[in-house]
Image 1 (cartoon, rainbow, N blue to C red):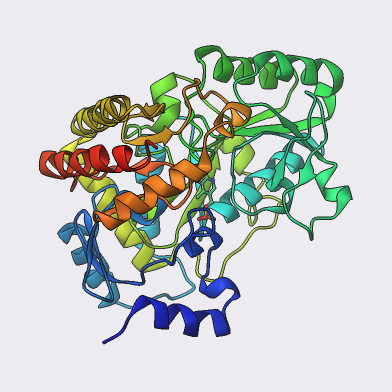
Image 2 (image 1 turned 180 degrees about the horizontal axis):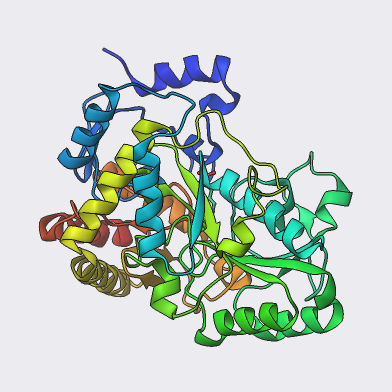
Length: 427
Ligand SMILES: *Cc1c(COP(=O)(O)O)cnc(C)c1O
């Protein structure tokens, strides 16, 4: 029989850390990751036959749960016709039409293979369109592993970014300004000082990569107004939020139209896809119509496009957002109450079907307050939940996601496990 420990040892011999994306290695929570062999609905099964209720959902894409029959059927149907042609297909047109219809701010769209490609390409386009170099991003927002965006702030409101990774040339980092999330004042000061040099402001309209951190009502509006006033572009990174917070994403929820939108995750239905789009006049600068080069051997891949289209169709038809909201609310309220009865201070942040239990009694509204959470206690909670068959993100600073396959029984089972897990970490 295969076991996870043996597989991890083999993996570590041939891959850095034995994984193809760092957080999978459980560095932040300790222990060894189970190797997964299959999944169905809300559940994962590891190679040793253990079952887990999954709140990671492939890091967000699987809003319909694993192996939804409509998505599986769409992939099989596409597979029967070929895995890729490097030539235009009808499927790409259908998915692009659905994206344009769902998001009024997106008049024209380019499909790519990942969220990282989407943000990288959107930045190049914004710089070309404005003829400016500087980018504003926010502390704690993740936009993929693009050099220009892999930066956190130093202290002080207008600090230039310090790279989060070696290998990023200082000259590249120097074009990115990093500000605190939800700080409209800092954004004001930044634009007053150097607004004429700023090509774009990029942000997660509901942050999901420092844990779930919703925006203050004034923050998104300030970003919209300032970019408009200074001739910069506003880029919403909706790789997580589009089709999760509602069919029209965060931009519909908050009533703000960005100039460019980055997409990924759900629009690929579990297969690798990204996209960036926006006003036609801007998108017309992308090759082959315009001079901004961006290409991809597998972009618009038929299997990925089929999975994404089937997912969006189902979301459109079944409109599960009220149910997801109710499940999210029940889960968040139950978790807060379980923590409180165990005497464990937590702050549960939630928007719709994305949430994070921060192990801190303080409100969490930006990177500084998020990192005030007790990560060691989260690690213990994570292990206590895993031991009870609940698969949470292996980091304090990630979102839990709920799918349409998470029914009332799943929420109840999670809360039962959580009551015991909070008691276990109370000491
Ligand atoms: C996941 C994510 C990305 C990167 O997408 P990849 O497909 O992993 O490259 C970008 N932005 C946000 C907000 C994300 O959550």
